[in-house]
Image (cartoon, rainbow, N blue to C red):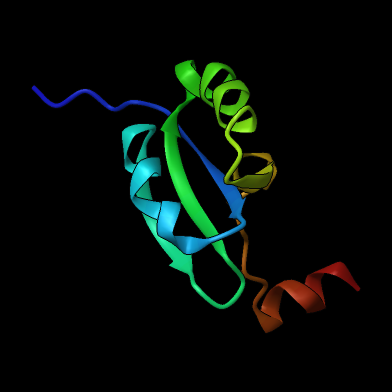
Length: 88
């Protein structure tokens, strides 16, 4: 059966977009911006530290930052007008 693996998004800023194909070796490329010269890359959470360390040694990588989506609370509650009257 299908097993869910935890993944982490990382943004990799490059000096030149010609190195984009090299990043496919490290994870799944989800988005790339030629104008701003960055690639959004999904990596397995278990390999995150080693991939980040290895990418920082590459000459074509300017900097790396991690996405903060895991830190956000994704459970939202909508308030209806009835709920507002009960609070008052």
